[in-house]
Each structure stands twice: as structure tokens, then as C-alpha cells.
Length: 367
Ligand code: NCD
Ligand code: ZN
Image (cartoon, rainbow, N blue to C red; front, side, top):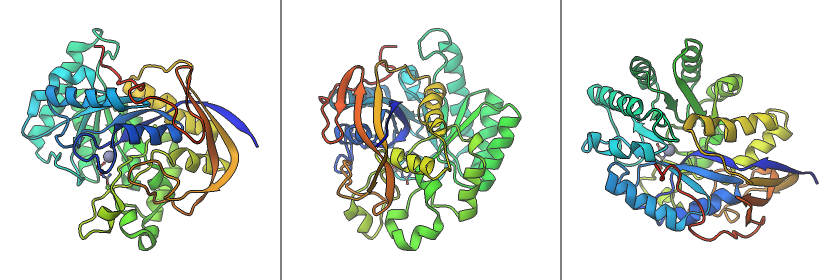
């Protein structure tokens, strides 16, 4: 039995579903699941109902998170076709601007080049206006879900407007190779890959059916191999924790998305056990880089104790997410979280959540 102490991990891409979809998840259940997974800060996506696209809606969401979260939460604002510049005044209180340009769950999708220009231009102008003014300094990045041909479009808009770009959940060989080239050319780009796109492929689809359906879809084994070959290009591992209920997944039009916030660490530690990753690979991509890319404040006296030799089977019943399932059910993994300490207080003891709802902080709200 080898207990290792890690810093609190950051999951830079989660959907905590509140407001609007609290039958799938809410700020308490989602952040409790995060703590059980060794994650002490999450960045929450804007595709809720209503979407997080105006100051009033942002304030409503921040109040819900402040009342219920047990780990720290950063909130994205979302680009929408009907509100356009409405979110700009609250940009400094967001961890970044999320733009969905490819197929996704929910109503937020931008497919118009003129609008895309405008979002990059105005975010860049706001960042210039804010520079030096706030602890969050020049604002977070524009984070895009941009697959295939939309990827070079976004890379070039970011380059042309000199706005930092973060590509969420990269899955294809062609995409990671293009990002490598953009980085080599000095483009201001970073990217993330999910555990499910590292550990599952389209070969798993017959077995998983709707449980293996998410956007981007599971990619080919060659695409998965490309993620591993290009690990140096991958800045962040983030889960895209996208809980939907099993009843919804079994229905006639299953929504895309899979839970993940509490299975990331054991899956990655199992890859360390198998010699495919080092512990430093994990810490770089689950702590150091997300903090740098999003300018997140440090969490003093925050640790995760994990028994890296403890082996167990992941199961639906073992999940804390309200969704109550994992696409990795039945997988044998290493790495059991024994204790999580957040700002000096034990918030998870390996079994129970000890933190009070509302003890998590909503990041960037003091600006
Ligand atoms: C996400 C969701 O359910 O909110 N679904 C998914 O398949 N990833 C939306 C998204 O991240 O695109
Ligand atoms: Zn997502």
C-alpha cells in the first residue's frame, strides 16, 4: 500500500447542469463527485437552461454555485446568437468564453463566420481593456469545441485577433497534428483531451451503445494512438463530465455525453501503473497547466491522498454523480482517493463528503 500526496486536481471541463437540468446533476452532486475523484476545482460549461450568456444569468448561476458547491468552481460564459455582446461586462468574472462551433448537446451553436469574427474581436478588445486591471489580468481564453474543418478556422481567427485559444476535447489525428503545427508556429493555442478519448475508441461502441455516445464521438484506434503519440502537444486532461440519466440514454433519442469527473484520476493512475504515463504527466495536465491556461488562483493547503496501489473495479453503483453510471463500469483500476483536504479542511475521507454545501468558492467573483 503506497499512499501518495498530490495537489488538488483541476477538471477544466465539466457540465454541472444547474440551472435547468438538475435531474442529471447539480452543483452539490457534481462537486461532491469531483472531490471523490481528487478534483478540488472544476470549470463549468455554459450550456445550461437558460444558457450562461447574460450578466443576470451568470449572477444566477454564480449564486447557485456559491450556495451548493463543495469544491471550487469557475464558470464559463457562452457565445449565443441572440445575446451577442451581452456577456462582455461579466467577462472578467468568467474563466473563459465557450464557443460551440461543432455538433453538441443544447442550444449553443455558432455556425456563422461573421459572428465568429465578432466573438474573437470583442473578447480580444475586452482583454486589452482589462489587462493589468484585475487579478485575472487579460481574461481567460476562448475555448472552442471545433472539430475537423472548423479547427483551422478557429486557429486562424485566434491568430488573426491575437486571442488565446483553447481547443476542448481533441480526438482526431488530423486535429492534434494541426495543433502541433500551430504551436510550432507560435500560435496562442492550447488543447485538452478527455480520458474517454484516451482509453476508449470506436471499437468499444458495439459494447457501450448509448453509453459510448458523446461529442466528439469516440474516434478510431489510429486517432487514439495519435493522442498518445502527441502527448507533448496535450496541455490538459479534462473530463467533459456530461451527465445524462440512464433512462435518457436508453430512450429513443439518447443525448450525447458521459460522466467522468470521478473516474479521471484512477484511469490516469492505471496508465501510470501500466507505464504509459508518469505521475508528472498527470500533475502537469490536471493541475499546473489548467491553472496557467485559465489563470486560476492557487488553493493553499489543498491535497489529495491517494493509494496508488489499491486496485478495485469501477461500477455504476460506486459513482456519486447523480447520473449514477460510468462508461468504465467493470474496468479494473488502480488508485483509490483516501482523503481530500481543501484549504486545510478535510472535505472527503475516502467514503463520505465532509464539506458543507457552499464551502467551495466561485472563482473570479471579486473582480
Ligand atoms: C455535452 C453535454 O452533454 O453537455 N455532451 C457531450 O457529448 N460532450 C456537450 C459538449 O460538451 O459538447
Ligand atoms: Zn463539454
